[in-house]
Length: 482
Ligand code: UN1
Image (cartoon, rainbow, N blue to C red; front, top):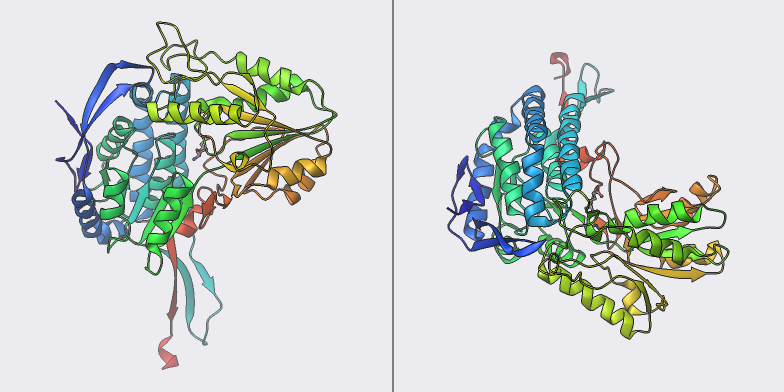
C-alpha cells in the first residue's frame, strides 16, 4: 500500500500525485510508493498550524524542550532504520546517513537547551516606579522548506528552533526524500508533539509556490535549496509581512598556499569535495593552488581515485550515487561542457560501468584543470563530485580568484602558517572561512551565506533565536505613576 506523504492536524492523509521511489544505486529496485500533497494540502496545513498556534505559544519552555528531547532520543533509537531508508532514496552511504541521524538528534537537543536558556532582559525603567522588560516572542506559523541532500539535519536545524521558541510549523520537504521525511514526522508525533504544531506536506515546487509561499497566516519562511528557487521565494514575499531566511548555493574555494603537506591537504580537500557525493552547497568546487606547491594535481587525483564508488549500503563504498538520473545527467553534461571549453579532465567524470553499477546514478569523482577563471562556466555551481583546479602565482591572486564569484557560503585556506588565518578571513567574502580544514557544520555555530548564498539572519547557534522570535517591550508602570 502506498504511504502518505501528508501529515496535517495529527493525521496522515494524501490524495495527490503518486511518487514512485527507485533506488539511486540500482534503479531496477522499486523502493516504495508515496502519495504526495497539493497546494490545497499546503493551505490546509497552514490552517492547522494557525489553529495550534496559541496553545503551543503558551506552553512552557520545559514542555517544548521535553518534546524536542524525546524526539532526539527516538531519532537515536531509530537511527539505523531511518538511515537505511535514507540510503534507499537519496543514495548517500550508510555511514553518512547514520552520522546525519545522530547529528540531527544532537541538533534537536541543542535547540531544546536553547529554549531553556532564553532570558528576558530587564532595562532601567522609562519612568520611576516602572519596570521595562524586553522579551522574545514567537513569530507565528513558520514554513520550513528543506532539500534532499541533508533530509534529517537541515529540517532538524529549522524545525528544532521553530518549535523550541513556540512557533507552529508547515514543513515542505523535498519530494526526492519522502521516506526520510515521513520517518522524521512520525518520530515527532511519537514524541508527543500536540496535533497541528508540526504539519508536513511532501509537495512539488509548483504546489509550494501556489499553496505556501505568500499564503496568509505564514509569518516566516526558512528555505534551503538552490539560489534560483530561493530568490523566487524572496521575490514572492516582497511587500508582505513575512520574514525570510534563505540558504542557497555555493561555489566554495579551497586555497592552497606554500609549505603545506600536499598529501594531507589533498585528502582533506577530497573530503570537502566528494562527501555526500559532492551534493553539498558547502562543498569545495574550486581548488586554487599557488605555483610554489608542486605536484598538487597528482596528489588530488590520487586522493580522488582512492574514493570507492558504490552502493550506499555496501560498507566498502566511500561515495554513493547521485540522487537522481537528472542529477547524474547534469553533472555529466557539465563535465562535457568543461571538456568542450578546452579543459583537461585528469580523472573521473564518467558514469560507472560494469553489471553491478551501471543501473545506478554513479559518477566517478572528477578533477578538472585548465578552465579560464573569467569564463561563465567558472561561476556556475556544480552539484556533484567535480572540482576545478586553478594555478595562481601569488596568495593575493589566489584570494582575488576565490572572491570572484557571486556566491559566498564557505571557503577553505590551507597554509603552514596559522597566523594567515585572520588575514585570510579579512580578505575572503564568505560567511564561513575554514583554516586547514575542509569544513563542517555544528548546531552551536552560526551558519550563513553571503551574496547569492544566503539572505536573512544566520541559522544555528545563538543567532537561530533572531529569526524564530520577535522582540516585545513590556513597560509596567507603578500605581503612583498615574
Ligand atoms: C553538512 O555539511 O554537514 O548543503 C551540512 C549544505 C548545507 C548543509 C551542510 N545545506 O552544504
